[in-house]
Image (cartoon, rainbow, N blue to C red; front, side, top):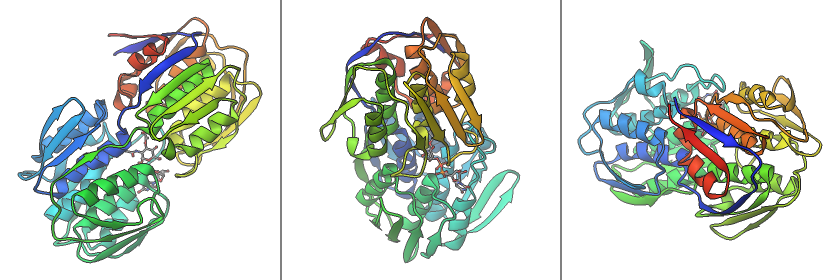
Length: 417
Ligand code: EPU
């Protein structure tokens, strides 16, 4: 298993590009299932999760051609409606084929994802929404088995804000008979990007980006081209790296308008931030100030940025309180950060982090994608060597992270197993 070796203590300087958003690319790849005509995507990040999604689509009979960051998908000859456990267990976003398969083919067999390192993460809202649209759904041998002649538009109120739940239902509704209203919809920018791709395919969608999405079903979707939005979490991770390590960095190909909560918190740490339409510059000349934050659905503070800000708080001046409200077990990185000398007390879903003057490098283990990113941020400031193990988590969601950080002057390298 590959590891990352980080020698902490370098300030970061320079310019790096932001990649396409993983959490927009994954649902948009699945949207290809909704049409017999090709979907042409650009800015698709080269990530392990994207490989998994393409493998899953290929098992269903979707042909794909990938060149650099372009992916062309052709779902004209789908031969299976089954998403097997082997793939779904490695990537929960596989559940995103459920809505499109039922909508276009009237049937789907998608494995239930099972356990997850950050929380229970059930998919009951995806199922409840599809049932409300007339699908008959049973759970058989660990699989969600769904069937419907044609889905029918209806009003769906989800019990909580769910990102992939909203995406699954929105995709299903594009081919349903009549109007579907999704209330309490997720407002995440990735939902908006998916809606833009669907609209380019001929879908009729209003309200994406608000908590009420209205979809007027159409008979068929057609081919389209779409450029995947920039990854706001990858961008935020690099900004946290600078907030912790100090320096002056410009991110290009970014989308600062989707990052208000993150940018506000970075400014609270004392970072000076300037933005254009598609770039962000961060300048950090002093030790960060500790900040308090509480994760929430968009436009609140993203749970996917929580671990990285915890790492910043570890070396900040003062005490910061972080409350995680989205996932019940998303503090695994705290125990690893303590191995680097961080002072963190956890009580339930709250972490109290007392900034220390310095961390000291150690071997640590990544437990999930964003936890790993938090450990890398901490490693960049820790004195001596930090060895981050199990970085396959990082490879799922960060494109060439170590190469980008090295381009900023970080002393970081991949140690091949
Ligand atoms: N929930 C339910 N039932 C459902 C759906 C969700 O109880 O049917 C609960 C979840 O257990 C959780 C909360 O609702 O407590 C919110 O979960 P959500 O469904 O929004 O999460 P998700 O769609 O599974 C996406 C991202 C995650 C990100 C969350 C929250 C993708 C592919 N994944 O997951 O990204 O943390 O939204 O913003 O979009 C990551 O990239 O590292 C990652 C975990």
